[in-house]
Image (cartoon, rainbow, N blue to C red; front, side, top):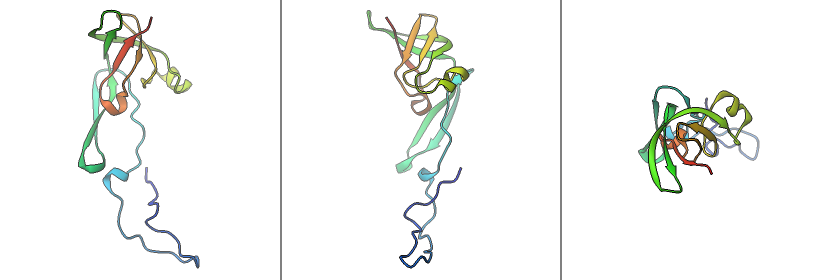
Length: 127
């Protein structure tokens, strides 16, 4: 997907065109969202502004689940996505995003991290 170069090639007041003064930078690329689904762990790495990099999860099978009553964290297998308030289509397809409810071996948990951008699934058991 190519994003238009905003403010790089404005038109003149007369309606004539201006030539862009530079090309598109790596961090300006438009990308599809990294939609995390269930499966064997698969990471995607991309360059972001400042030459830094972000690792996002494309597929995941485990989550770091915290039990609020005891405060203990355990790595638990994700069974399925129950509810996703971000998008009803995500719910149907089983996409994991921040705020979605997942069923784990420990019980129902709510995702508190952004797996497509953080590269990890952190969740908290619901009461």
